[in-house]
Length: 349
Ligand SMILES: NC(=O)c1ccc[n+]([C@@H]2O[C@H](COP(=O)([O-])OP(=O)(O)OC[C@H]3O[C@@H](n4cnc5c(N)ncnc54)[C@H](OP(=O)(O)O)[C@@H]3O)[C@@H](O)[C@H]2O)c1
Image (cartoon, rainbow, N blue to C red):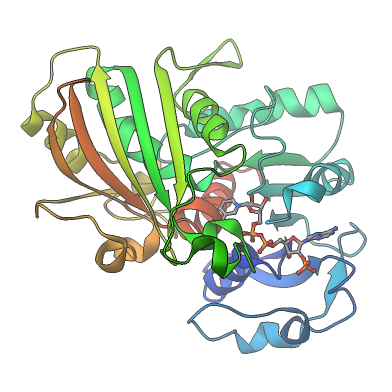
């Protein structure tokens, strides 16, 4: 199969670097075009980017030029990891010019005609692009993935929602510093510290969770009818968001029932064997002190959600811990899986 040429908007940032790394050996997509701010445009990628990953910067990308974020010369499919201050204007310009923008940024996630997708959860929401094209009149499209904290929460909730129904969800996060981009939080603000505020994060988690677990009704998403409350904190961990979660369910459940629902969960990415899909989307750890980012982060190449410590909750019904990789499953890997779903559905032909 001839590979599809792709590009990255915001290629030099934390998530942009993940895209570069994950695309290196991708069987369907070939990275040919990079763009970032005026500060980086005109340089080679190696000059423009402060490479922060342990994986080696791929040779084929080192000497690629970094362009300004203008559609001329860009491939049809673009992954976007732009700063949200500019993503709104830039992504729209590319969609208007006929490009398919698969975005990490928050700007369009809650628009009623923009799919907010996790292919393991709500692949049918991709149909919203028909409404988008009709309403916006552009040839291209914008498809989004959720916030990095929302992904782990929703992946752990979806088997419970399908088996028992959700009534109430309470989530407290311990979020890695890489989630704030590069260079991120000043050392003096985070060293030996916990920062109990991440601007806009709690609101994003609360509304995105209800959209992702909402149902398609007459071509629109009907938001999930459960309550979500999020507490978001920044902690001194490099990668990986850990979340403690309490839930109330609509129908009667047991702890073995919850464990079975997580272990058995499979969906469309596994059925179609999409290249970035984890074989086991949810991994259950039985040890009393797991999951931990130090040990469990990279299971299934950073694409699985790891859960553990399930027990009864005296306030809601059950409580547990979930862990998810914020720049892979929560960002670049999520967008790649979205594009793979789109290709398998014929949207990129
Ligand atoms: N980090 C995560 O875990 C995570 C997870 C999910 C979603 N996200 C979202 O993904 C996006 C990128 O996050 P990040 O952590 O990679 O941020 P980052 O490290 O700060 O990178 C931002 C990127 O945007 C580019 N940029 C900044 N200003 C620009 C402008 N005026 N015009 C064009 N490009 C511009 C930067 O280019 P220069 O290098 O040239 O400045 C860089 O490539 C954000 O919207 C973020 O909310 C991040």
